[in-house]
Length: 249
Image (tube, rainbow, N blue to C red; front, side, top):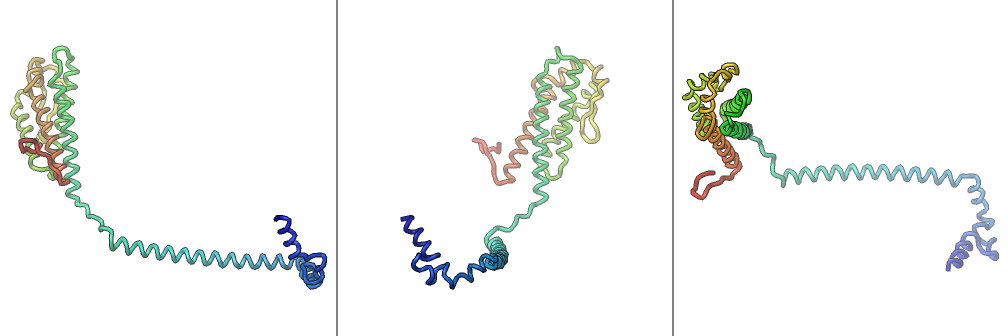
């Protein structure tokens, strides 16, 4: 099959021995073309042709691509305007409220942890420096909650609860002062380390240690702040959680 094909191709190009002078590629009528080929004229013509064709093709492709891109862009704009929901405008007040709630939740968690650690501390076997560090840590967490409660975007349920905590602290002003602890005009508590070191250890233990102590009450209150903030954050996004008794948990 292959041999027949090769013979046929050879005959079509060069002719058979019987027809070489009657119109084959090597016939006298084609010898002029053969000369042109040898001189390179055909090669130059072909190069010129393909360069022109290639240039036209690229131009058409670029034009087609540009048109397609333009049409696609135009079409997408039409679809976006017709079907996609317009961008939602963010309410700055809502964002601020969310930040304030997140802050009070975080600082209250710290207060709950630090106040609970102080209430459960072994005052008898701890050094004065260890006791001071624990009281100072709780005081810093307490002050962070007080500072966070100043945000006007917080719900009244939280600001009032923090206010009650501060009122309880103020009611113990004299006891606190005996341990070198004072309440500033900003309602934050400050500790004088030297005065605290000279305070009666039994007074410190009675005030901060054990169930129902100042530290324990603050730990419980702080847990309440966390729950209030969490519930409000959920309500802000359309969710609420109620206990079996119908109370918001």
